[in-house]
Length: 433
Ligand code: SF4
Image 1 (cartoon, helix red, strand yellow):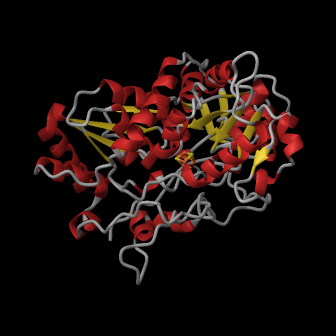
Image 2 (image 1 turned 60 degrees about the horizontal axis):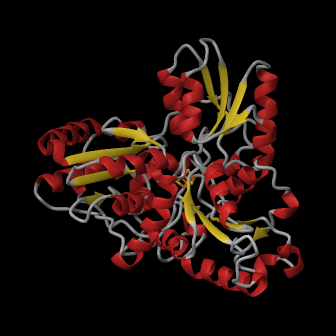
């Protein structure tokens, strides 16, 4: 069995409690590679699981796609052979193929991407490509978005269907609909004297197409970490308050930066009546924050910021807005992956960074900028364990199938959902960040 152990340099390794870490990985099982994650002994087909790593404690809902086993030849082939086969298939497919790679994707895969970016940049890229096939080396909601933004004749392929997003799965259509009905009971449905509706739903790009469609149908919109402030401003022009899902941290950080007091941003826990709030308290709310999070970004702490500053008083701490608010407040700045990439690219030689985002991106930035000192804020390595599931074996498998004329692992949004989801996405694309 071929595996690709994760070997990533970071700051001196200490466990979260300050004791020396026994392993550089948050879960040693990550070194087993995706084969171990996809194969659940005794179960066929495999049950949906997120596998080891940062998302280990998150619960995969039954609706999470599962990946059937791929042929043994792809599981056994050495990475060097897989790389040759991927390159040959890409050359054969030529302009009929475009490979999109997310910043958080592993290097062995991202080296084959025609475009690398965050979810916003890749969504924009999907709107412009004329290739017959878009192979998306990201996670499931990104592939769905690409399908929404391409023509019906173009196919969007996710090399490993089990590459989901635990944050996206923290909000589903049933629980958001139940929340909406409760909010209508509290706020009513009529616009105020200025024509603003009681609530505008805003979904983060990291959500299912069904939730994007919900927003399209209810006067709402999609946002990314690149444009969240502009999208919230759009929503406040049209509504008295916002229901923001699924990431509480991005919603809280963005609302706070716009001057919304914390006490007007209550948390909505979908497992509790009224989200765990009193109806009276909800009347004063400006941003209702869904109880969701990214397991990768939620790991960052103020203690890590303090340790980075103690080690190097000149260090610039830059974090992603999916981090908890206290971490964002303690950092020198916060911004999307696109923003972090730009800050690093424009830095003066010799600048030292401690970066609070996914490790594959931090590692790549460090390799691309040898004149800078770049380290991950978290001394323990925790990649996005779902994105990590796209191994070169899966990429070779789907590309060689395309060469034979077979489309495997196509991600296709139902027509009934797609039309409404496109409305919400189009609203986002028209908002200038
Ligand atoms: S980094 Fe977090 S939000 Fe992004 S795909 Fe992975 S689990 Fe989802």
